[in-house]
Image (tube, rainbow, N blue to C red):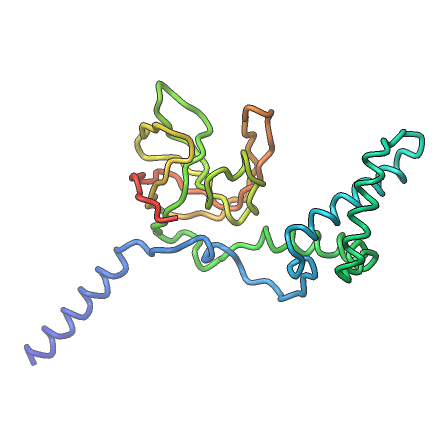
Length: 221
């Protein structure tokens, strides 16, 4: 009898210890489940996307600002982009028809959170984008998935940003310092003003973590 009680006690202790350990997650875990959809832009190369944007931008300018005088260089760039797309058999009209539909689907997907992580103790790594400095130390920041996100690169989807308040301020020697955070993750959709050298941006984020333990992290990519 004592043997069975000991086994039961050890099992309960192990379960409690497992629950006490923070769940290690990555950025993909933050994404909620969305209904799969076909994104035709995903099949295009970077050059094709660029040519499509050039042709679309100049074509739109001609429609919206008919009195605006486009330069010969701009018109030639648009025609060259169109010719290259046609040569590569890209259906330009179909791409433009799908553009607004895909943008709306992407927007909805970016807001979907993983409810299974709500109020869970988690541990994850990323890059610190400071919101405010105080004598070279940071206590509030965004955790972002890549170097340059929100600044030199496009703003990530809302479900790929975490607004963090550190338990203790941390000294930072460089922008986008790689770090590891530990704490209770909350699903708290919000908007923050981020002031950068090229102006301020309104950043939408889906998650927050208050009282986080922040540690330096050696990034492998």
